[in-house]
Length: 128
Figure 1 (tube, rainbow, N blue to C red):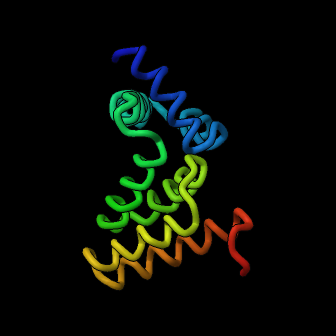
Figure 2 (cartoon, helix red, strand yellow; figure 1 turned 30 degrees about the vertical axis):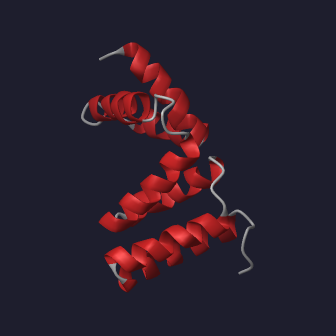
């Protein structure tokens, strides 16, 4: 593995998802899952997020749209939190979910709204 990409990826992953979350995941990795955690950190976060062509806020917005389209709600929640860390606003999240509804269907947008409401409430950005 390219240690430079791993280190760069680790820094970006922690910046977006939070150091505590990332360190907890890496610490929980065992011989079975550790190679994937390390490779994913280098590939996704080092290579994918590592260039300056697209800023982290825009990447987060793209991720929300793509992960929402795939219906991977556990990952969507994680990246919704990361998007807020990268400067995506509540209004922008709402607009992304509208696009998900248009292109992926109302049921999927409702799932995204449900998860976004949870995340935004936890962050004190929505009244319960």
